[in-house]
Image 1 (spheres, rainbow, N blue to C red):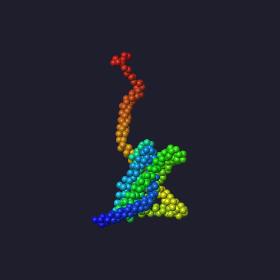
Image 2 (image 1 turned 135 degrees about the vertical axis):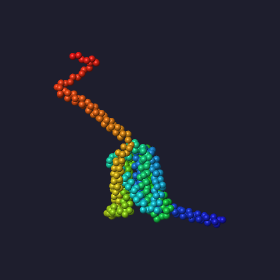
Image 3 (image 1 turned 30 degrees about the horizontal axis):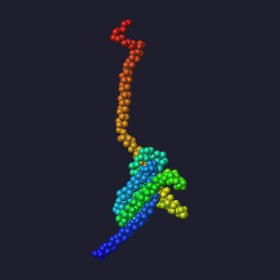
Image 4 (image 1 turned 180 degrees about the vertical axis):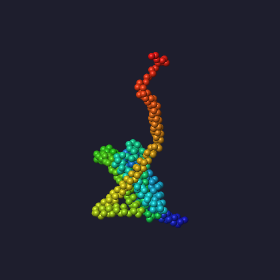
Length: 374
């Protein structure tokens, strides 16, 4: 009995060690996979704060929380099942689907650039835009879907040789860690002005001064993050398209950018890595802006073509009243013309008689029914 129990405990210990080793392997693999996607994580953290600008202070964290929950749903309910199934059965579809998402990011970024250039907000302005939290959160979650998809696909490429269940575990860890990092950072960023306000009220002069400086600096930081977020959309979207076209067999565009990156890297010595990265980033952003601008132009044209039809469908009574008024005016003009034509012959006869006799016809005066005596 004791021997059997000892053997069972040994088996449990072996399984525990294997599980611990497996967990360690998953953790290491997740760390490596996440490191490859670090650039997109930074972009995601830069994009998100712009969605809470203009909100009341007490609504900032609840909105960030709702976006974070939406991000987890994106990763676990949409992205993770889709990319695992595609990688297992239809791996060739991963790149086209990612490129569609990249094109959407280019559209979002180019639209924001157009709004700045044209000095208007395509999504509405004033109080209506500020209080429409549902639309705001939905837009943020759509953008997160694309950025999260790239994070997960990049991570998947790093663990492509693992078994299906290992890939599932690794990507699940990446999904949770990346979401916590991104939206934890976003939460800190949007509440830093509140932290500064608290510090400014402390009795210590140095701390209070630092707090006041933080309060003054945060609007500028958020404005800068808004610009960085828009640029990140264009860069990430353009980079997805650049890599995707190369993987699908169209190499000239990627090779041109790659040669420029290598030339910048080789020609700048110790700063070659940074300069080469900047060249690739700027080139990707330009591609993103061009593609996004074309999509914005097409969408704007389609919306303008559909607007008159939509207005006519939305206000059929207006057209009916216009037609009625038009017919009424036509009838009025016709009646007036008829009366004019009816009066015209009598006048014509009178004038004709005057010319013929040389005498103006006498006009009978009212006699109250008695004949006039001469």
